[in-house]
Picture: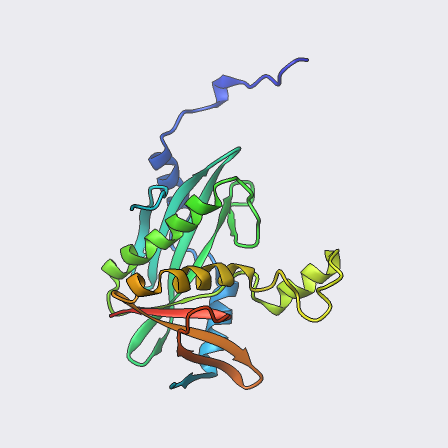
Length: 52
Length: 180
């Protein structure tokens, strides 16, 4: 069976920390979980603290 | 004993919160993101939502509903827990709310469409599964964790969410924590 060939010319090597920094820069300033934040806001608009 | 974890990398620290990234290692390398995001004030504390999910390269977005199944759930869970003390080192007077991405009504509706279990007629067994994992952990490690943190459990009622001091082994829909 033939293995899939990859064109190494178009690939670059990057360290793990470099990769995470790259992803972080792409996501910088973005809210990642908007739905969760909206749900959390709703919870706090009608929250009651029960003292035991 | 130190828990096995991945190394976390804090990024994008602002007044509104902080993000952490790490790579899950298994059959695939998966980039994970943890975000603490400020959304309201409560009892003189700034409250942050803890969100956690996978970075999907093709879509350039985070998916918090995906079940990665990368064979390292224990490592990943410990790593998310590791971000908590790191977060409070930067935001000492904050409060953090944790909810599972499977706790919403929408999750249950979606789950029922493909559900094969016959015993889920009353309530969806998969709903709240993720927050149950957090609650079990807090219950199990209650003594050591409460040396540093105060925990509160939240449960939904028809009149809104009720928060109480965390009771070990009780099920909650959300967990709120503050550093002492």
